[in-house]
Length: 596
View 1 (tube, rainbow, N blue to C red):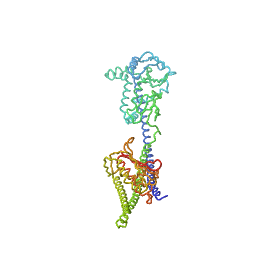
View 2 (cartoon, rainbow, N blue to C red; view 1 turned 60 degrees about the vertical axis):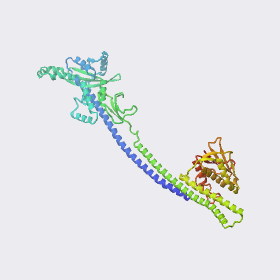
View 3 (cartoon, rainbow, N blue to C red; view 1 turned 90 degrees about the vertical axis):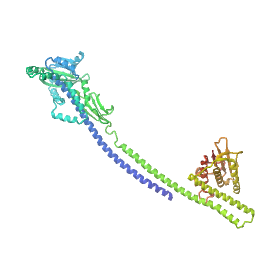
View 4 (cartoon, one colour; view 1 turned 90 degrees about the horizontal axis):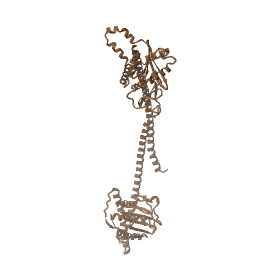
């Protein structure tokens, strides 16, 4: 492993190890935070479910209170009916009370004496069939166990007459804990008023009469309100439908009603809260599982969080179901936080690696450019030293008069001239490179006969090529080829291409300069062709990079600074054209300059 490779590996380790350590530590912290959030969300979820379940239980109590108020009110109304004109009073009470479907009078043995029902005789006949089926073998008031049970039920659900003061205080305190207390209390008052619509009429005249009249009518009052022996309710399913009978056994017989369930169900909607929390819902279901009332989030295909049955004989099989928007275990608490945190950590790590890689790449590039510049300075110094040495040697010989032959003196002078031109080109390349790098290169465009300019340049280079044993052959069209461009820039490009061909294509024996314009071309095209070894495929694009040479050693066979082709391409692009390389058919290289 080379020192450079070891140094690169060390740099990468110094970058990767801390970055990976930061990433692992951040992920561990995120996981711990996720676990903490999940635990907190679990506690919050359990608390929410407990609150929703408790609220469902409160709704059940509200339903039971409303149903109990209706039941108690109806039985109180039956108990308050006067004995005089009883059948007429039953008929009027049935007509005036929307909660009563049928009112009836019966004997203690279950024989129905009178039925008061709205509508045609079909309702009366239907009631008699239902009563006969429900009261076989004995009516409910003749069953001691049921009578005792109904007495207990009445004491449980009748908030108006059988709930103790302590229970009232407890229920009131629980109801006031919700935001719907006023709604429920209003519904209860309405239910009680509707259930006792007729019973209050019988007490009013007695309250308004003078005391003396009341004393005289003492016996009539006793006759108007016979003593109640027992009372209760009985649910009964007939032909797939629920029917509920209420009865009061008095000393003068049995009075009863069949509850109008539709009216009761309509009033039960007040037991549900007017507002629910986000993602919460409650539904009141009948014995068949049909939704009678609902509020909030009630999905069709999701099991409820809690199902609480309604403990009321009139609503046997009914229940309140509570829902929340996510069942247990459906959501992964804190996952979103972990995902988002992981993404942010990943972005941070990528940014660190990308920034470090960019800095590392920039450092390598700067180091490579520094090495190229060092090589460039060495090559330029070598390029300058050779012609300067020749010029100084020949100038000293001529100055000291050591060359007597006129022909040799002329040859020395020509050599000094050529080396001076070579130095001028080197200095020009360095100056052009500096201006191009700093963006200070100015182009002066003017009308130019490109054919004439190329002919002049080729003519000035012919002696140098002849000394090298090369043939510089022009292939120029007849007539002028005029374009608007910078004369010096075009001359610099062509001279650099010719110099490059003279260095690397000398083995081929010839260099061709070709000018083409006209049909099929958007501008003009100058081609410099040689028969040298060509450019390796790996270097065909890199030869236009600054300081790049296929062989950049000081002992290379061909001297150079690695700037000629780079400067030529930059000048071509500055003129709005392009310079590219292509292999020449038959061997060699072709450099193609295209100008607009």
